[in-house]
Every structure is written in structure tokens, then in C-alpha cells.
Image (cartoon, rainbow, N blue to C red; front, side, top):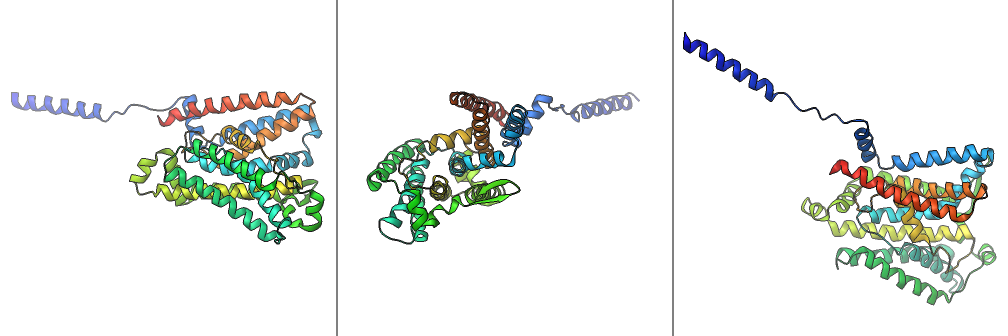
Length: 356
């Protein structure tokens, strides 16, 4: 009888222990934790919110002067070059690199297009193809030095910036090809500047190209194996290599594509300013990094959305036009953009703690 009672007690104790094992700790996040997790899963959400708030604020302050189809599309026209170059910069930064040569590649490609057409008499479409090929080759050289020689991307692209910039001035002899000459003899070079109206909004081919480029890259990065490889290399190249990712091939494809996109930006630059000038677009590298950082793409690589870089470029465009219409000093634009850059990096650090 005592044995039966002892067995019953042991059974009850075991059942109680089983119940205690089955209890799991509640890891439900608080409000801030939910926000942090949401922003981590959707990195372009922060710049989108900032962009919407900026548009609403300037719209309330300026009324129809700002909230008009012409003003909205004017912002797109103003940021089209930065938006295209920022797309190229985004690809590099997603692999935990940085490209200081994007602006020089853009300008040099435009100079090649213009000089090949007017100095050598090559048909404009062929000259444009040569400029696109030159941009791709410079990008390939950057990629080879980074992936094969294992040089830091910052050092490689800093040196390439100086080399391409010097080559640009030496080859062009600081000669500017005027818009009147291009319009009369090679209008194809100004193709990206072609304008068309939709309901009072004025678009250019360059704006359409920028939007298509960003959405195509966003789809490729999100839904293709190549896109997953880009993120994997940016997050941890050694782990990516061990998991079967060809790191060299991925980096080469990213740098070559970046060079090609910069060359397209050079073609769009001719359409935007009308002429071929070796001194134009000198700040494109800084402006592209600004758009990428404000757009929420992590400078540490492996996290971010290329849509964010578009939103970042648009934020700069909205602040620039809004403050100009308000009659504010141009220095206020630089001050606010600087604050946005610091805030964006701080927000990125906070959001990254989710994965820590």
C-alpha cells in the first residue's frame, strides 16, 4: 500500500515538472520593439516617412506654389542625375564597399560620348555605346582590384577618382561642347533631356529612366539569386563564400553594373545640362552617398533597400526646392541635410540592434 502511495506521489511530481517544462517565456515586444522590428524588416520605411512629412510640411507652408504637378515633377528633374548615380552607389554599399569614383566615371563617360562624336565624327549612337563601355570597364577594374587584389574599396575608388578625373581633363583639354552644337549635329546625345507633358506635369526621359532603373534593381535584389548573393556578400563575405556564393563573381558584377549605370548617368547629364562639360557633376560622389545614407542603406553593408536611395534623393530635392521657394539662405539646406545624415546613421545603428 505504501509503495502504491509512493508511486502516486512520484507520478504527480513528474506531471508537475512536465507542466513547468511546457511553460515558455513570453517574448512579446513592447511598442518600441515592434517599431524597431518593423523598420528592420522594411529599411526604406524611414526615408519614405521623412519624405511624406517633408512634402506635407512644405505643402502647408507654400500651398499651391509647392503642391502643383509642375513643382513635383521639377523635383524629379532636379534629382534624376543624383538618383541614377545613387542607384549605382547603393549596389556598392550593399556589398559593404563605397565608391568615390562614381561622379568621375559619369563625367568621363559623357566626355567620351561628346568627343567621339565631334572630334572623330563617329555617329552619336556608336559614341554613346563607347561611353557606356568605358564606364563598364572602369567599374570592372575597380571590382578586380577589390575582389582579386583585396584592396579596400575606399582606397581603390579614391585612387580611381583621381585617375579618371585627371584623364577626363587631359583628354578633353577642358573643352566644353556647347548645347547649340549638340542640338544641331547630334541631338541623340540629348535624348535623356527630351520632355513630355502629362496632365500639367513635365517629365523627361531621364526621369523615366531613373524610376525604371530603381524598380528593376529593387526587383532583382529582392527576387533573384544574384540579389541574395549581393546581400550575403555585404553581410559576411567569408560566410557567403562558405555557403557556395562566388564572391569574386558577385563583386565583379556589382562594380561593372555600377560603372555602366554611372555611364548612363553621364548620358543623362548631357540631356540635363544640354552640353558636354568636363567640369560638370563634380559633387556627384558626395551627393550619391548622401542620398544612400539618408535612404537608410547601411554603410556596413548587407541591409537596406535601393528604393530608399531614391527616397533619399527625393528628400534632398524636396528640401532644396522648398527652402528656395521660402526664400531661405541656401546654407540652411546644407545644415538640414547634414542633420538628416547624422540622424539616418543613428537610426540605422538603433535598428541594427534587432539582429544583434
